[in-house]
Length: 43
Image (cartoon, rainbow, N blue to C red):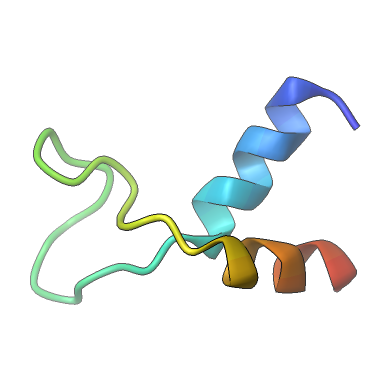
């Protein structure tokens, strides 16, 4: 696994608020959720 793959998993695992469009300047890709990121790796 390289850094771009790790970044992709972290982005996919982020929690997003449906009110905002992502990515944005305030929240980026959403709030970090490591548990969700690890679940995405298992898929």
